Length: 77
Image (tube, rainbow, N blue to C red; front, top):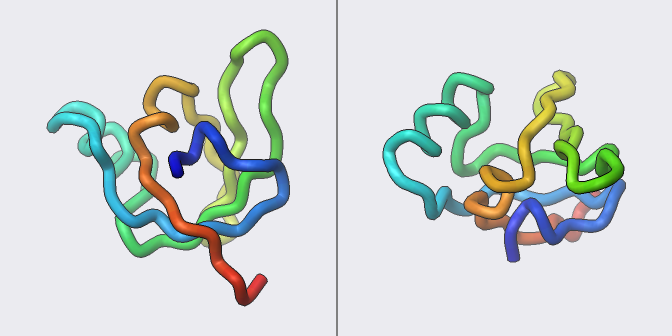
């Protein structure tokens, strides 16, 4: 499953990033790394970005890059 497929309010763990070097670099610059726990807060209308929360910070991520973030659901939240 990818971050782009996630339901709002769901806590997940980033497993890996399937994109190339540019995608991995962009996510690193946003502060997202494999092993981080994230929660999808909101999906913008009309294919706009996703708003996620990681370590208390809200981050907007485009759907294209979110589709490259492989996640697994966290059962503890």
